Length: 283
Image (cartoon, rainbow, N blue to C red; front, side, top):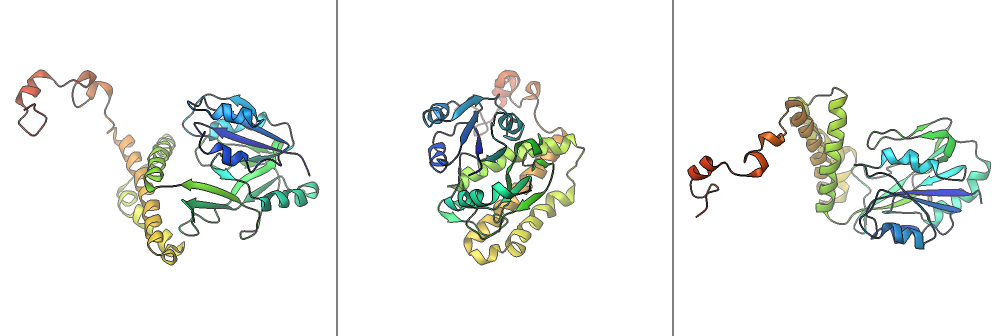
């Protein structure tokens, strides 16, 4: 088999990492680049025989990808997240195809799971990921959720074949909404820096359009109540992004010296005395 380096960027992944590493025994090399985890992530990786390095902690993974790729020793690199799994079908495909290919990179279909349910609708599949490539032909952007730039030919694996990634995306809607909240803030910052604005149409109609696309065009209606839930999750994420663009554009975020309860979070004495019962006053 053509030697392949597997690269994993981590942050507090002690729960997910062992399952990921269990599917990577075929790899010639596993490089784990950790962003100063507070748990046992580095220890788990080291015990599994991975080469463990550290990168400064950043809000999302893309800025650390290029550093991680530079640590790989082989020409071919497969990028995997700790909550992803590499099935035997993808390994078999690499063994057959990589020795004779002229491509620089491959897009791999990814199967996303809500608990044990494979999400086939609402844009969650085929969710093609550009994750397998020649190390010297790729460069990641610093922007969140942006595909890397490729020098050369990119090919796409069959959608319904055995060669795919499995992504244990989320177990509960609460955990998914936490990610939506985090990533929408990062996306909003990027959009504002680029001069983007959030108008009435984006705030009112944008989330509704996202829901209709997910539910109708991306076949959420075929999945019953699950499809309704997933379509609204997509719409909610779109709303959060636009609302946070508006917030930053309008300067609505409270500044430290403009906190509603005065400096340091303390209630000003005069206002505290005037506060009626039921609105913050002590009984």
